[in-house]
Image 1: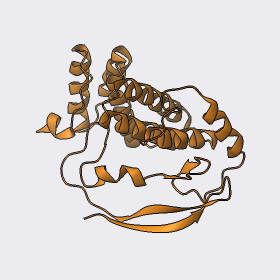
Image 2: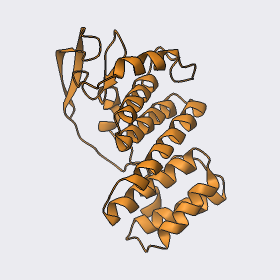
Image 3: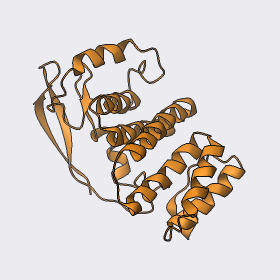
Length: 218
């Protein structure tokens, strides 16, 4: 069961108030996708993962969180002539705005996650072009984060395995296959080893289909 709560919040960017909805509780039943998109009921709560000010379009987990200098970034984003920035509805703009704000704040891992969330919304809208664009941004940010942040070996392998799926889904067949092969050489534990083998074969077929973890290990 999913429960929500609505409250009035003040935007830290423009100072205006708006009603925002927060998730109080939810659950998951079933297998996540290979990129860890959750199953229902959490899957249907995406609209509430990031708050958006309806006045200035500041988007972050909480619009009350202050990010210094974000006003100039919002103006820059508003002028960008890209497929996601020109959307007037849907979640792509919200998540991609949050992604750019997180990157601006130096939070590359979070920025990659929001870009991937945008790709999920594009998938739901059958917008393959935007989905590839968002995934490629997510992959680039995650690659950068993996190269610059100190992580435990198991966490780095897990995140890199998600990166393989982002690359494959955005049709970057060779980089995805090469990364999966290099990860396999590190003898990862199950089920990551099976997922990587599956990804290599999917890349060989030029298969960008969405798969669940249960498709691989069951």
